[in-house]
Image (cartoon, rainbow, N blue to C red; front, side, top):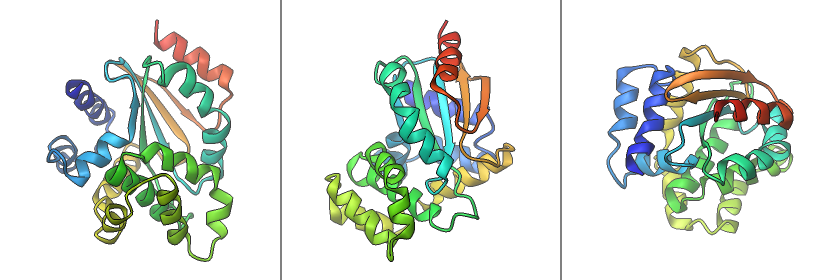
Length: 217
């Protein structure tokens, strides 16, 4: 299992989503049990031995990202991810036009660090996007979501307070920009560390099924 988990990081580097040697080293040699390691592991789901890996490059304040997450992603999860046929990895691209996106990315990763609940927080943030973007104190709202999802409060608060995942968000941001990705959501589908497809925007489930079925052949 550990070999495959390292494998998707190799795919990330091969894709040039890890733009510098320093970033690659930080991701591949994160100390076991460290906040960086827990954050890295929490944002990957699906089959540890899957040859097909999908990188979701997204911004939590992006309306189109929320549309994908709430309308298309559940069916993909059910058919391909939960069955272990593919692996799915989230990569942050908080756009400068979305001032709350960084804090939302931090909240999701800290939910992963503190309670292995990255994907639960990912889903909640997209489901409640309209509510927290209008909230008087969005970061307090994120803490409420974390508590609702049974993320240990002291560990979550420490992660946010101490900027435990800031370096990972910065690595993601620098890497995707260096790779020429500028819009969200962007999806990069790889097989055996080679790029098969890059898609931008919200595509229908039928198109996703066709592309993934072909990749799995």
